[in-house]
Amino acid sequence: MSLKSIIFDYGGTLDTDARHWAHVLWEGYRHTGIPVSEDQFREAYVYGERALAKAPIICPEDNFHTVLLKKISQETQYLLQQAYWHPSEEIRQTAIHNTADYCNAYVEGNLTTTRHILDRLKERYNLVLVSNFYGNIETILTDFHLSHYFSAIIESAVVGVRKPDPAIYALGVEATGHKAEEVLVVGDSYGKDIVPAKTIGCQAVWLRGEGWQPETVDENLPDAIIAHLDELPDAMKRFI
Image 1: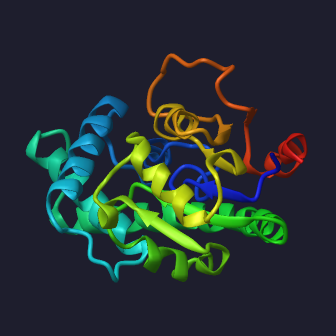
Image 2: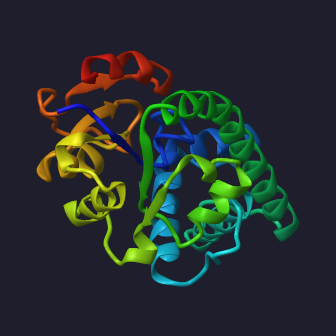
């Protein structure tokens, strides 16, 4: 059965070209010169993600630069609490803004390629977005000039279900208006994107890159594996 729709993941797929956000942020820390080890940073990253998930820190109107400022603020607060870093508040705030600027510019650079690819695919397929996010993904898509590509957006904070629960991808398939076997899922996480997509009968392209940590995978599960998003159009030829 021919493909009619494509469901995209957002974070790590459309914005960073298969790099987990922890790696991008760590690169930002090093660029800015925040003097902590990678292990200390990873602790702070986990703390920050949990803090943002538990409390309404991110607002629906926050664009991505604002998300970065809030995320890095949580992380650096943890570094101070653990006595991993001892800056003045002025130095800390400068570091937060410089790191956010660096990471935001990184995304902006990647999105030039992303928009080109989405332009090509939108001519042939219905595109839907499925993302674990904070309730402001529509603001971010609008700010980055991406919202017009998607006929529907399924966001975890809005629908109340998160990856890797296959139910969130089932909602994505429902939003396409097509059968699961007519839908292709593209994502960077084997466990959170590829496994649940295949569980509900979708086809899947795994954008394999720099993940959070090593994981056991079955490379026969995805229908195709690519290293960079710009390889997707060629990979799509096997589904035609």
